Amino acid sequence: MFRYPALFEPEGSGFVVSFRDIPEALTQGDTLDEAREMAADALLTAMDFYFEDKRPVPSPSKAKKGEELVALPASVSAKILLLNEMIAQGVTPSELARRLSTRPQDVNRIMTLNHATKIDTIAEALSVLGKQLEISIA
Image 1 (tube, rainbow, N blue to C red):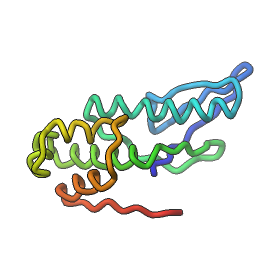
Image 2 (cartoon, rainbow, N blue to C red):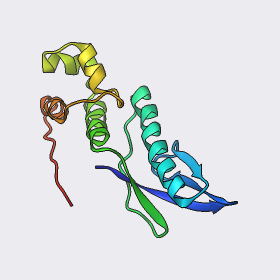
Image 3 (cartoon, rainbow, N blue to C red):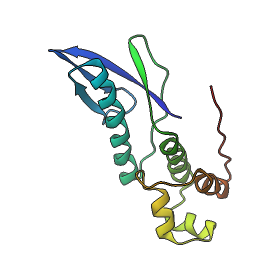
Image 4 (tube, rainbow, N blue to C red):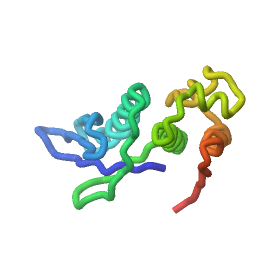
């Protein structure tokens, strides 16, 4: 799972949250707990920009003093790995569909963040790109 460092800065009676790796993700909350919830939502929402623009998603950096890590769902993290690999190899969704022996519409669904995709499907897509999806616990 990707975990991005976030800075929670007091402002007025609440907190402003920013992510140095994902500048599109900015939010705020009245309480620290609300700011944490809003941060997770803002981070997830910002991923849509990368997918829509077909831009590589930056990898998370290590947290610095005063930052907290905010996690993306595992399914989104796996889709980010797939997007980044497709971009790195110059593989279009149509080409990935051809390699998977499926329809381009099916690949478009895989690449849609709010579409539930089986992890095995993402692993298969990475496999035809010459990569292996590994899962671990910490």
